[in-house]
Image (cartoon, rainbow, N blue to C red; front, side):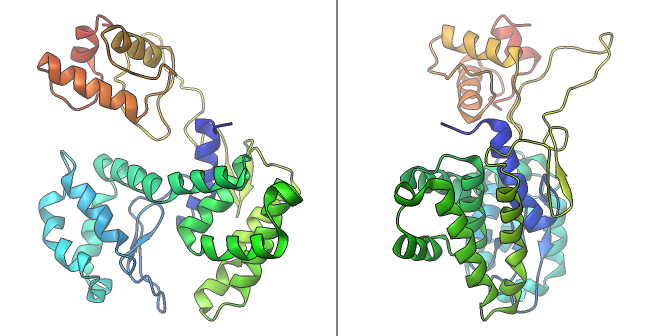
Length: 311
């Protein structure tokens, strides 16, 4: 069964805490640790210069419309592509990256990039193994972000068998135990220090929170509805107006999103009517805007909603 938006956000929040210390993630985080073979790391899920993924992320940002620091960051692309380790000490680049982290365009670029690079492959891996628990997917996602998922997966498959043979949750517990042992004995001292990630998962196992029901705590950080952006919206009726609908993390949900989707479907767009403003809805909004001669930004504001008869 697919994860809900809340469960996905909770799973990603665990890894955000591991990576940047906050459940929502620090989009502006710039880190250089002595001895880290990844060298300069950046963003919510700390993508690295050494892997080449930092180049891909910054390229995606520079290609995006309305990127505030496109002109400043674009000259760095060749050096990022070459994995120039001198960038570890380039304070000008570090400052630009921190500034870009406050740009909503960079935040959207990171969300899409990390989903494509880490989350979506983790989802595929979980389904291939028949692992349906949100906590199991969080474990795989953490290994994709941190590294070495195939290595430890194959060790557990070889030594313990497949999840269907020994039990899905038991298999995940064996995986975490094997990964903890591997981290604890690693030659890289920095990796040895990260056994806390596996200890955090063990605490969630012990609590029986396989569905990632909130609230729960990871390394002293509370994961709640409000922290994940799913809390109630309190607004005076006198001040409330029609929402501008657009792609956010977590995604906008509600009757107004559903009305938008139904209006687009009535005009011939193939759209999933699920009351969640995801990438598919954004794409349909852009196509409608383009057809109507509106600014095709994928944001359903007053003009777009009026054109759909929803104002």
